Image (cartoon, rainbow, N blue to C red; front, side, top):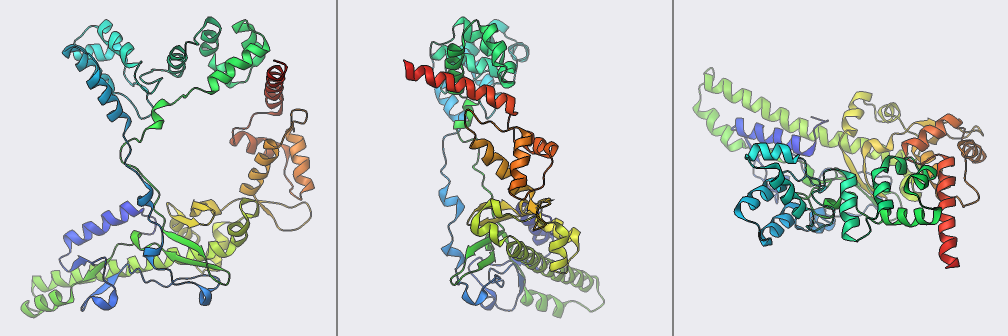
Amino acid sequence: MLQLTHAELHQFVDQELEKNPLLEPAPNDEGPGEVEGPSWAGSPDLPRQGKSQSNATNTAPGDRPAFEEFVALAETLHDHVARQISLTAFTPHERLIANQLAGHLDDTGYVQVSPSDLAGNLNVGQADVERVLGILQHFDPPGIFARTLSECLEIQLRERNRFDPAMAVLVANLEMLARRDFQKLKLRCGVDEEDLLDMLQEIRALDPKPGNTFQSGTPECVIPDVWVMPAHGGGWQIELDPNTLPKVLINQSYVAEVSSRAAKKSKDMTFLNECLQNANWLIRSLDQRAKTILKVATEIVRQQDAFLQYGVDYLRPLNLRTVADAINMHESTVSRVTSNKYMVTPRGVFELKYFFTVAIASCEGGDAHSAEAVRHRIKAMVAEESFDSVLSDDDIADRLKECGIDLARRTVTKYREAMNIPSSIQRRREKRLWRNGDQSLKDS
């Protein structure tokens, strides 16, 4: 039960409620003292924990912001397209094709069916499908109903009247652009460096996924399991989100009534005992699950106190065994607890697994460094590069050593590539291109 997500847990509890006549959901507005005679689990009044419990504020669940209050029901992409189809002067035959094409539109705005396949399914001519598709490609947002990235960019460039022969060659060679092979692109397009710069700026201004500007389907948000808030007087207030805890109870009055009517050795009494045993197990399991999550989260907060106060640079290396030993639990239990569980902190919302990172040795014999914090440092170094000072992987490794972080060059390369940061050669070439473009703009 520990590794179940919110949806899975509630589904499991609903199944138990359906097959066990002794169980019933606890009213959301009632606490343990307000329900007459039941045993229950999932209480919102589970004990709060933190570094300074005596100074912790008694924040009621209603005092916290509800995520769903910030979610607006925006128009979906398919609603937007359907409205445009209804306003277009299609014939009934064309409208049928248009609606079928719209049905194959994915959330990013690309159509996921070929005209030939759709023509065969509808028993219409492929030319008819192509003609209707051409009309739909003029719909808003620009780039919609494309079949490839190149076609998506072409549609947007034609909309801006900027799809000249040189731009057509550039769009046809996007793989060179991805490799930042600007020298070959200049030769292919037949333009100089300044013209290529202008073309690249136009490409950057386009939207490769035009459908993403619309809300697709039902809005989804992460539901946190744990809230971590600063406590008055220092420390952290840690508590479970009651909205994630299913609340069930045993109807003791019903148990007493059925027990009084059933014979002690009858099948009815056997069934009643089985139901009562299963109900008690469910209540204990839900209670144990909640307490275990709270216990693990509290230890994570204790270990990562500096991160919560100062940011990712202070994220400590941490593994499952360290937490398991600190709270006297098995490592596999901690692993199940941290899977698909989320924590709200002053730094944002994080999955509990985020706080477990590999340790990187210190050059000076001090505390080890978190791999996540080191990746953050590498990203910051690259962001601060100037036109004339681009750092190689060796340079980054040397600078990290100056900060007391012992990291091999090949590890720097691995981290850099994982963050999709180009090599120093590619970054230098790109910066030179942008600098020449900026200088050209100043001269003009």
